[in-house]
Amino acid sequence: MNVAIYKEVWFDASHRLLHYKGKCASLHGHRWKVEVWIAGEPDATTGILIDYNVIKQIIEKFDHQIMLNAADPMVTCIKKFQHVITTPGEPTSELLAALIRDELGEYCRAHQITAKVTKVRVWESPTCFAEIAE
Image 1 (cartoon, rainbow, N blue to C red):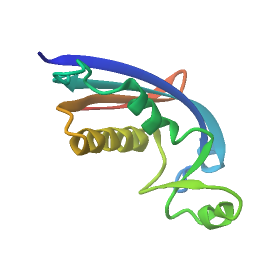
Image 2 (image 1 turned 90 degrees about the vertical axis):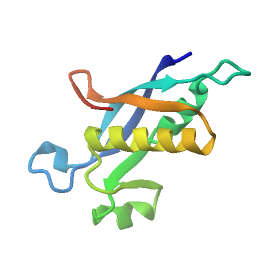
Image 3 (image 1 turned 180 degrees about the horizontal axis):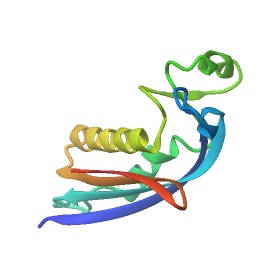
Image 4 (image 1 turned 90 degrees about the horizontal axis):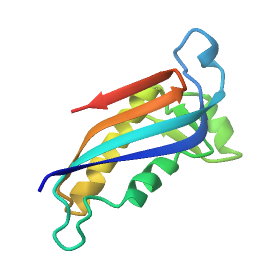
């Protein structure tokens, strides 16, 4: 039996876009919303495809964090005072969608869960989102 599940998670975090010309080049924060769709075969014993709490934990690692491009010179300075999540490029909603999809996919493979992340949508504001789908 193939099933699909959906999970929504909110987090607060700041970022800046190193190579952007405009307001987003300055460090600023958002109330991010992430939506995840996963489809596959539920576990024969538990009947669960993937624990919703696992999805939440993977996404909540961004909560109350500063996200910066790994090449951003601000990383070294801020790391003196707190943890910084560095990304392999600009920490955009587009990139976050891909990173979250990949991490959830890796979790499923590592735990032999027969599931595929079919879509991730990352809302940067109530009117803007990026989506990655299979």
